[in-house]
Image (cartoon, rainbow, N blue to C red):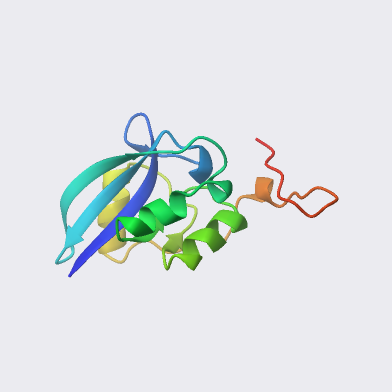
Length: 128
């Protein structure tokens, strides 16, 4: 079965600690639990929860996001597109995907605290 996994990436093939401000996304195509292709998707400018990245990822059939730091707004947007998020990942993106496929990655359970801030009108405010 074919599946695509996205990983926010920075220089050095490392996972970016901040989903919404990564340099680019590494998109892995997996078939029969093996990586068969790796592509690059440029990251939109600005905060991830305010961009269309969830829709862009869904349009190319991404089903899983392995993330470092990620806020609730971004998680909700990804979930609305049926993309599962595994939080608090660290390290080399190729190794992370292999660990995920082997069943060795679990969700860290914490979202990015910088995204817990809202202005008086209740609108999301990024503090980066």
